[in-house]
Amino acid sequence: MSEIIEKYYKDNNVMPMLLQQKLSKFEKHKDIEKEFEYWIENGEFVSDKPILIEGYTAEKLAEVSKCLVGDGAFDMLIELRENPKAALKKIADGFKMK
Image 1 (cartoon, rainbow, N blue to C red):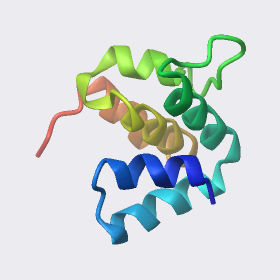
Image 2 (image 1 turned 180 degrees about the horizontal axis):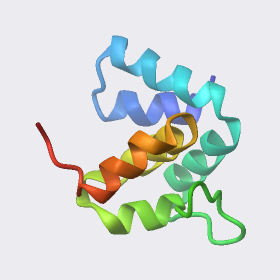
Image 3 (image 1 turned 60 degrees about the horizontal axis):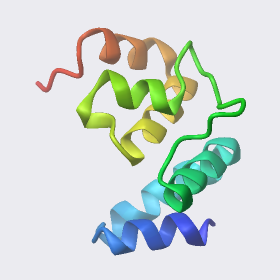
């Protein structure tokens, strides 16, 4: 478990149940977890060989939608990896809420 990510979420008052869900997602994707830690610690995205999934990096996702600033971009990278078809549709649809 990433202490850096856990502290980030606790500092942002994420509820304990949601915190555990988020942490377990990152546990399954250590490469994305490391990039998220870098973003937390440095306040910027990795520029040297960032993770690229389905044509998107965390930085590119953050540019696509205001909804994806911060942890949202890294959550979407995980979604792109786990369920690319649904994630790409969500991006194409402009993250419309139902």
